[in-house]
Length: 117
Image (cartoon, rainbow, N blue to C red):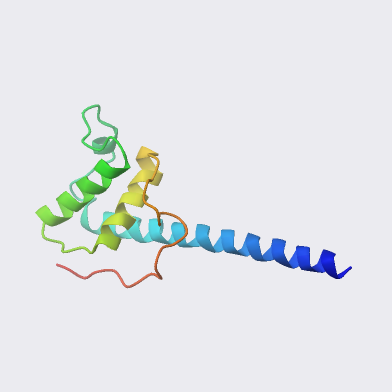
């Protein structure tokens, strides 16, 4: 009977870890959505993400475009800020395979949103 309890405990622990990883990813996407709607939505409509000649063609180029535009308008975002926005855009529009090693389960604890004006 103790083997059954041990296996059940292990199973529950593994399920919890998976839920934490998914919660972190969702939190990052929500944070990315907030940054995007606050700083980018005024110029970018959804049409920019659907156009045929879009510059983002994979995960790497999407992240590069987010970094490029935040720098162009002087937001001073951290790499984590840019990654969160790229994750949001990817989940909402692009559906590229995210090739970053810490994309889902190894993200840092969330920090306050940058307040660059």
